[in-house]
Image 1 (tube, rainbow, N blue to C red):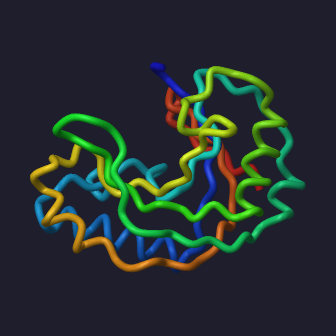
Image 2 (image 1 turned 45 degrees about the vertical axis):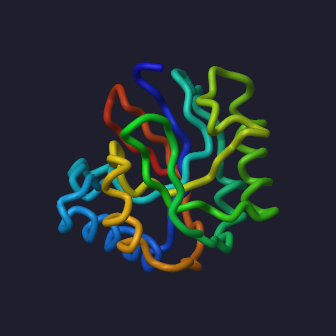
Image 3 (image 1 turned 60 degrees about the vertical axis):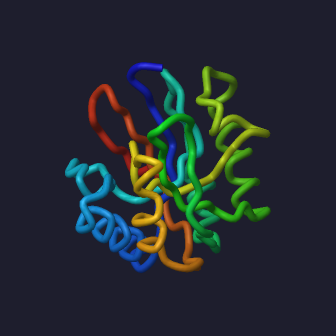
Length: 168
């Protein structure tokens, strides 16, 4: 897809800190981790939309529906082959599914990444990319039990300009 634009949900401070702790534990064990990605825009999030272009849209009323309760489940793998993406699953509640649908309604049709498309959305928080299958026994114990928190914000991330815009 090349350069992309995404709409992302942000976690409350305590939940974000717990995910960052898992990032740090993976990095300390010498495993791939998003802790190694030092961009100021890098923070735990749940992606709602990813596509090559995304026109601006009004989100104030969507932000007004926040906070939304959130449950991060256990570790899950995405991808195929020797290297995978290690994520924490997100339990899809009615509120999260309604917010996802509302954002997609606002942005209209587009070339969505499949895992963010309506009907195919796989909500998750990424922990590590390019994790070797052989490293799973070391990585999985570093991911804690179920986490409960809240979604507290919505942002737009533009890869081409490396900018983040708070939509709240």
